[in-house]
Image (cartoon, rainbow, N blue to C red; front, side):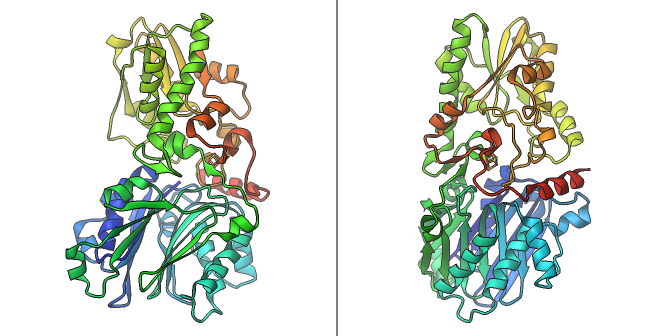
Length: 498
Ligand code: SF4
């Protein structure tokens, strides 16, 4: 998963995408980049580097940008070698000068990446410099635009994107800049990955700074929290398969017919609500915060049955920080069992799931949490986490709570068992790494060392999010997009990890 943000219309576009990236940092911590375009000088400005957003962009570097449109990316690597030289090649934005100046960022994964890469190399004689599927998308789009003269004519542009949809299978949201012509955005035909449009009026200061102003500024982002922060009103989520273009006069063009005419069903990623998105964000008109409150409420119903049957007897509800906190408050309220934050997070340690190697994840678990033994000793503790992926973090935390003197440790999660790999942008591609892929609930419970393991059911997850049009493939194996070529992706991912 990555975070993307793009701004069109304000002379401070690059400053806004920088601030937007800071709000999207939780979506990826490997690298960050910004590309801006200045209609006056007809120049691109581009900078990207490994590291956190605030480390990559110093005030001096930001001062080198100018332009009325900009796109930006914070990277979470799901494929690609880890050595610094090769991994630097995969940082976004990526650009090409043929047949037009184009820059792009994306969030997601292309499942048939290797087939498309081979086709580009062998049939189109393109040399690819990275291991990023964005470079493949960039080449397919630029190839589709090469014979088109007035590409700012929206019909011609949208036909090139539709040809890309026909070829690229996966979950992806894309933002891009066409030099001198405008900013574009599109979302995969199922709408697996999020992308939200916002708008605001320009301020007097902005209008004075750029006389040929557009009157309005537009922002597109992976999450609404960055739109809110930057002062944009949310207009809407892009529809699945929507293609949007804001031209050099500030006029918006949009096409939503690709998915409709093919009867492609919407399948937004449920894991955004469970883990990835900021609780302040609203995705597809559903507040992430309220979804997590409902996770806790609906889980309480399932936990209460176990209490009533005498199977468990929790004294405290304890969230595993940070993501599960909202659901744990709701779980505690509904069960009428005290809520205690007795696992204290070291805020300077990165989220362990998003780290790339098992070794770094193990170290991070040991460093990131401290248990308050005086509050835990002799009590039955009901721990709540957002999900169990590999199980290593959960196992270590249960050990830690036992070492702190807990009597019994129950472990609940706001996600059903993750049994299948994700090929659409989340980093659990190998079934061997998923603790629930080949184990029953009782076997996972034993592996973790919990007295009782309680998963939120699929039905309660859907009820909490409030819609059925969700991708749940990592839970139920029903992949909305063809994954027949996923084995190559999986093999390459494993190779790069080694
Ligand atoms: S497989 Fe899971 S993580 Fe991947 S897009 Fe679907 S719901 Fe999200």
